[in-house]
Structure formats: C-alpha cells, structure tokens
Length: 347
Image 1: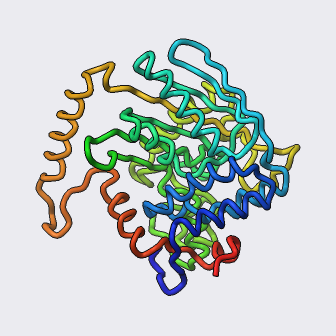
Image 2 (image 1 turned 60 degrees about the vertical axis):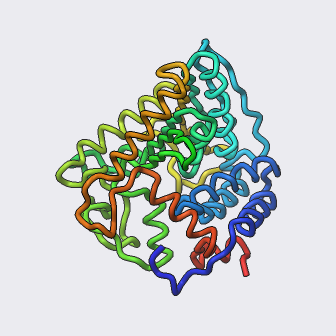
C-alpha cells in the first residue's frame, strides 16, 4: 500500500480475530475460519496486501451465497507411494491446501518427494502460505493453482488463462526461508481491486480494458496481460499453461477457460472447480541435510554479496524483502484499506 493517508494499522492478532469472526458469522466452521485467517495473515504480514485480510469479505460473501460449502467433507486418497489426491468438496480452499501440503510432506518423508493434486476447490489466497509450510519442516515446497480466465494470451485481446500463481519455498538453516510467490500474469487481479479501493493508477503494460486495449485506470481494467507484457508475454503465457496442466488437467479441476468466473454470482448450483498441485521434497533423500544446508548457505552468501547498482540497496534473495517487511509490520502494525476496515468491523 502506498497511500498511507487512507489506511489504518492494526496488530496481526486483532486482524486474525476479526477475520475468524467474520467467516464464522458467514457460516464457516471455526476450524476452517482459523486456517483461512492463518493464510490471509501470512500474506498481510509479509506485505502482499492484495491477498491478505482484504479477501475475508469476499470469502464471507461466497459463504452466504452458497458459492462456498460451509461444511465441506474433504476426501483424501493416497494413489501411490508418493502421490495423493484431495477432493476439497467446494469448501474454503485454505484448510484444504494446508491439508494437501501436510499429506505431501508425509509422502516425502517416506519417498523423498510427495505430490498431491487438489480439485473441487476455490480461491486459496497467496500460494506462498502453503509452500512455506514445507520449508518450516525442512523441505522444499512447490505450489501452483489455476483460476478462472483473467489474463490474455500473448498478443491476445481476450482473457484465457487465470493469474495461475507459482510459489516455492526452501529451508535456510538458522534463517527465514527462501520464498518465491508470483503470478504468471503481469500482476494479480486482486492488486487491481486493491488499486481500485485506494484510487491508485495502474503501471503501464499490465492491464487491458474490455476491448483489449491497454489501460492505466483500475476502474476500466477488464483483464490482465501475461507476465512479460507486450514484448515477452509469451513467457508468462507459457508458464500459465504449465500451471493449468498440473493443477487442472492432472487433478480433474476445470481448466481456466471453462471455469465458473470469480464474479459470476457463485451459488450452491454454480460453484468453481479450482485445482491446486503441491509438491514437497526432502533434501535428506537427495544430497543429505548437511550438504544441503552448506550449499544453500554458500549460494545465498554469493547471491547477496553480488555487485549492486546502488550500494544502499543490495541484491536480495527471493523472500528477503517480504521477511524484512514482516519484521517492520510486527512493530508498526498491518495497514488496512478503508473498504476492508468496514467489512471486518475494525475500529
């Protein structure tokens, strides 16, 4: 967030309480509300406000409309020595994804690697929330998810893929994890909605209007461009396709172009079938823990001590900026925009 005159700051514990309360009042089970709040606070703590507590109102609306199943009965099936499948039963996706990563880690403890596909799921917030769980258990985590059409193909003038995030996290001895969390679109569409709420203009080369023309106005943005923009968008479009193969084609979820739209008036008879794919890898079964830790430490030292254009801004590894922001927000509180303050009934 950049417009500090329009936000208030709150401690994470207060926000977590208000998120849980809102979701339970909307019909969610307390345990599901707690897991959802956990994922949203991960994003808010590290500065990914587009996927943080501001999404609580959206999920509450879906619970009330029937677009989300308030009392799901997820079904996990182990399909082989290192693979599994989870039917999320159209509930809140956050507890389902934490469950999927937990099962993947159990598989990896036995086989060295574990992969779990999730189907009949919904929007799951920030993918990094689940990848980092593996890193905290000493494993490398990889998480991808598809979503409904919101991004053009390269040189395209209509939406096709979703924003289709890719997240990965790796353990670092005595330090915060290495953490990558990115959309395969120019920016996530939730960032467009955040800019709408804050009245901030969009950067160039990220969004298109309903006619497929570039726009800087978040109110006119209809869909997004793939990562790489007009010149190199073929890279983002291809990555989005890879995510669709893993999270939809491999799991039984709907592919992006045929999925029920996020703003399509979801009800009990018109729910999304989003897919996720999570992988956990145990370094112990490859190079061994000591060798992994030593190599990772040396790699990150070389990376962070690389030459920089500005000595005041050294080179950073993925996750460095986010963990730095988390420490800052622990002291100052988490910024919340006016619309979200209202939905969460914050003072």
